[in-house]
Amino acid sequence: MTTDDSFNSVCDFIAEYAAHLMGVGVHTSRVVRNSKRIGEAFGVEVQMCAFYNNIMISITDDETHECYNKVVGISSHSISFEHNSELSALSWEIYDYHLPLSTIKEKYRTIVQAPRIHPLFVLLLVGFANASFCRLFEGDGISMAIVFSATMIGLYLKQQMFAKHINSFIVFIVSAFVASLAASISLIFKDTTSSTAIATSVLYLVPGVPLINGMIDIVEGHVLIGFSRLTEAALLIMCIAIGLSFTLIMVKNSLI
Amino acid sequence: MTILNVILDGLFAAIAGIGFGAISDPPLRAFKMIAILSALGHACRYCLMHFLGFDIATASLFGAIVIGFGSMWLGKKVYCPLTVLYIPALLPMIPGKFAYNMVFSLLMSLQTVKEPGMLNKYMEAFFSNTLVTCTVVFMLAIGATLPILLFPKITFSITRHKNKF
Image 1 (cartoon, each protein chain N blue to C red):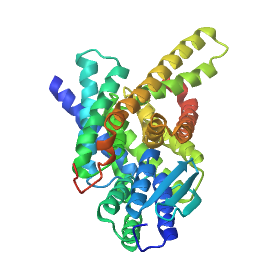
Image 2 (image 1 turned 180 degrees about the horizontal axis):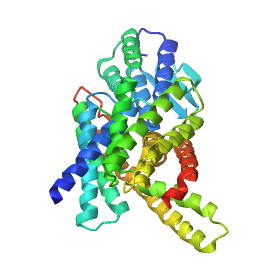
Image 3 (image 1 turned 135 degrees about the vertical axis):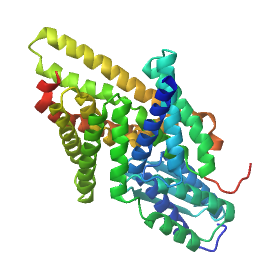
Image 4 (image 1 turned 180 degrees about the vertical axis):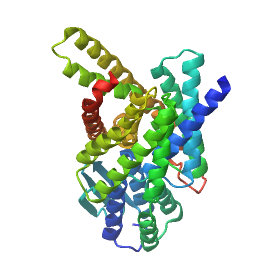
């Protein structure tokens, strides 16, 4: 150890740090690298094995060969790219400047407790995003306006249901159903691109982060967790399809 | 008119990228880069498909490569990991219309099981749409991940403020 802080407190921090990063949607090799980097700064060797719900972590003191083992549960936080960037930068700061543990913990708390983007602002941005998406698929002005409002309704519902800790699969099915049902209002307008409107209204739900992280994990050799993440993404995509299907069954005669 | 179409395509892709990024709480400094990358990637795919006659999967691969390498270059400027920039930038390239047709034709196949003519038509549509959707998503992931595989050292130290190179 190259610090006066106790071995256990350093190890506890590394375990908490790694579990938090996994929870906010960071691909495994980055979590492993960041944790090893922090360990190196303190003169300890970090080895870890990551699964979908847990991390097994083993830390050895380079001098005394004292060993610390822990299985840490990964609590599922909502995805945060800000935590990903700032906590990665923090690991380099610890490595480059050998900060004391108290300062590191203070910086860590500041990053983790920083307020997220306001949900209403997110709602507005995602509404515009999906409307633009509709335009990219050659949707017309009316479809874009309908997709904008359908997305706002669907996403608002998703945010509210997540806040009440409802099962994420149910949340995805209901949000997809409501958003596509709202978009099916476009069917009452003649000569509008209603199928494009219904198709794009659910795309804000696409789980891009587990999909890409799963691919990265697999090509980087973390095959088990990679497949776990892809399975999660596949299930969520199926939920979107189920929600969309409910609407399509209701309006299919108008679409054929 | 043609140039205007490319610019409009990039513009709408940029708005889409910013919105899809906002769901995942990126740092504020990343928004500008996400917009640039989305616009570049989507406009690149648009040009390849409309002017050079590329198919959607190959064009998506090149679009994703542009986004991947672009995020390596821009990520260094704003100290953001590659995935923070390229995941939202890739989302506007998701083949949503094909995915929708996939679900719709699956549903119609199940509804027309007793009518062989219609069943064949919908099953064919289901197969071709599934093929395009899966291939494009796979190409997007591979294209954007390429820089991480090719230049691991640069991509790993992208959030480092102290420059040691």
